[in-house]
Amino acid sequence: MTATNTNVGKTYTSKQLIKALFALGLRVGVFKPIETGVENFPLDGKELFDTACRYNPALHSLSINDIVPLQFPLPAAPFVANQGESVDLSVFDAPLAKIEALCDVVIIEGAGGLFVPIDKQTMMIDFPRYFNAVTLLVTHCNLGCINDTLLSAKALSDNDYRFILGFNCRADDETFEKTSLPYLNHRFGSIYRIDHDIDVIAKALLDTIST
Image (cartoon, rainbow, N blue to C red; front, side, top):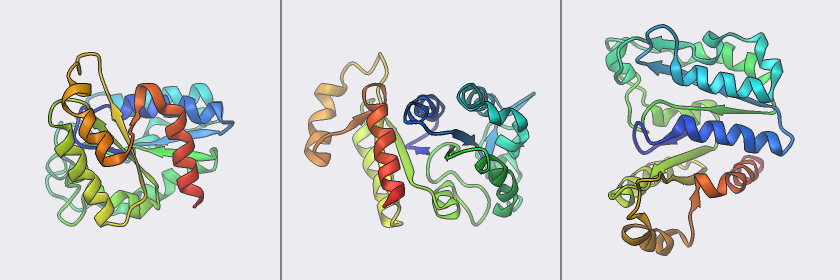
């Protein structure tokens, strides 16, 4: 899972997706490879872990460090938080394998948007290929969402990634239906909204994985 930017609602969406996939009879796991801004423990990772454990108690055998292998104190892009040091992506293989052994499906949550730098060679947009994952692109409903959504969707398409698009509309997004939705419906035919369509999104992701 990725988003058009930070604070768009990835963790909220992940938690809703856990419930939707559980309702389809699946054992769900979660994985957040990198989290920055970590003081005592990774807040987003713990939210994901706690929610997943409620629906898949087998995950209690894991630790938060399995769920979030790389943690940095500075709330910045991993490149900056890790002082430009290289990150060997194989560091994620062992913890992810432990999670996969307890699950039917794993939700992998990135940090920030697609072009957040991890190190000199790698960005978040490289994660779907490394993990062989279908991507859920979470976008916002504020004015400007058309541009942000199309840019991220183009980046995924240009990389030949399979992805589903979901809009996380909040209570204060009062102008969305007037200012943005008409074009989005024209462009995509219809859109998925996280608050209304999470069950449909879950099924669409599973269908995309199986194709």
